[in-house]
Length: 478
Image (tube, rainbow, N blue to C red; front, side, top):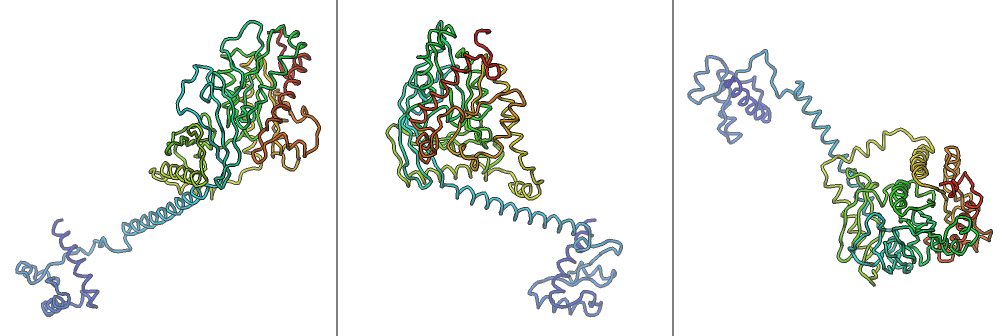
């Protein structure tokens, strides 16, 4: 076997040179092989030998005059392009080349997508980087602080700045909260997203609701209560899963008598929830932020900046600093994903070959998940009310979110009554209604928070007095 291997190796090397010089190996004979080999050596500048033409000339190989080529006639040469081994090698080489090319294209596409997404709105809030959070009932922000929020536009310019107050337990409110409920106190826990939290303005509608209800002697007498407290447990960016978690844990620990879940329809389908997602802290100089990823094995569309950066007190960013920070965040996302040993081209292939989704399919799935969370809240809370909060675009049928009406119908059919609070607000002109919202931001303005707080207070008053079983069970039967 060793001799055969050596013969084959010599033949491969020799035949390649012969064919290069236009000499067919079969043309060599016992008479001229020496001359041919000498000519070959002179032409190639090598000391290569010609093959021994006959088996009897094998002895000449010992003298160094030639080499013996022994290739059995019943064996195909392994370098023959027609052999299965060569075909498989060529096939896998082609597959690898296509895979690497597609992978390179996909990574380039992801890189371009992410690096081009630096024109978006971001915000900062100043305050301590670390703080002691109250156990069980502590909020998201540092307690007993006046925090300044600055909103920056897509080009990095400062759009607006305002200060909101955080109470003793880390919740956005000018009223301090006690963990233990006092005798004769009726507690309302208000859970929801940024339209409940009110971090975009100095006034929060939950505080306005408490002021109105605390002066409602008729309701206090009906409840047999000495006071009414409205707890603002809203979290910016909360989705139904987070609302469920806050309702079944924090609101329960506060011993709330009534839980109001306030939300906008868009909160039902956040691609990467700010709370509850896998996050990693990112420190860029004196700016602290986080990258949130729904799944640690994916990139681009599943990982994003928190959009709310923490800076030191009084710190305002220039346009160039905002752009540089956004670029640094996106580079961090790229490093997090593109350096991982995985094939991103599979995303490309999946997107090309995936079935065309049925219109409304995704909305229906997310609606079901939201209703499941709401059902859990209703089951585990003493009394509940679900309220759809209207941003300014809800008042125009042309800009109303697709699927929202269907969701409200689904909720009613499943036994979850959702109050469309558009019907609770004063009837005013479209121009007057715009003053209820922050220009460019579209959250409630200070004026809008006061108006909406009164509307919710009227709702609570009416429904508690009427003991409407569609909204909540009677407090007196608990």
